[in-house]
Image 1 (cartoon, rainbow, N blue to C red):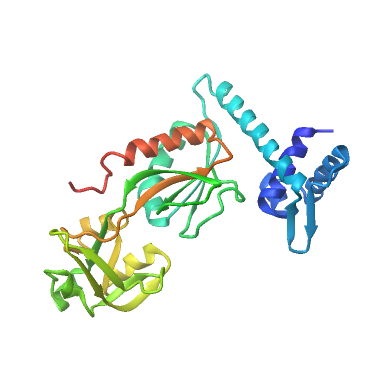
Image 2 (cartoon, rainbow, N blue to C red):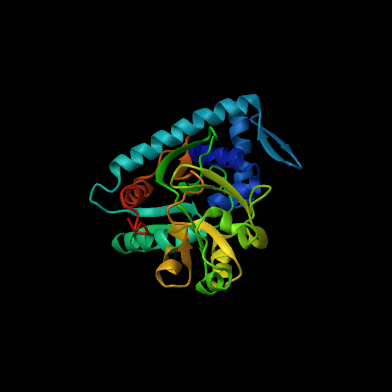
Length: 302
């Protein structure tokens, strides 16, 4: 009887909602996970899970036991972190989720440098615009735009998002460079597919006056990299975070307009599961992100 293996299997089943997903997370056979949970229930003489064709859920007793198991695993993780790496070595996986534009341009170079300095570190990075389930999918932390109110997650700000209005030089040559927000009205727009009206922009002027302009949607996608490429191709006006398009601006593929104006007030945050402390390696890398981006980000011209 391996009670620790039982606990790990049980926690994985409750967090993923299925035996197959739990087995995939642990890298073992589905039968092994099922057997460990069965043995746990038999040993405790308590029904911990409800199983149906729609998945697995914890019973009331199972939820109470799950909370206790999390505390045990958390204490064990802290004990491992306290004793491991006393010789300065770092080993094990670091699982991170982040938007592609940020990941490719800004997180990847830091991860590459960290991996080169610590050969035992194993990065597993999910670069997509989807909101991954950090708890169920076993991520250490995520980089996200905007605040989360999920009680299962803990968040902290990394840096404010500076959105910029850009288009290709050829587009501005054809349509004229706007001198005020109203000049954008009706122009073809490249928009991120979020919200009910992504082509309506609220722009705050240097004198604090707010202007709402409606553009004509021409190209829409749920990925910032595609939008930036469309803007470089001259398809329309684009509104993207500066961290995503600063390279294109620097290289002359895009030109920023209305630079003294502001759009949106959002933060990029580091988000992690509340129930699980960061491992020493993940915590170390999170500190590198804090030090790099919480002062003067590399894309900041000022």
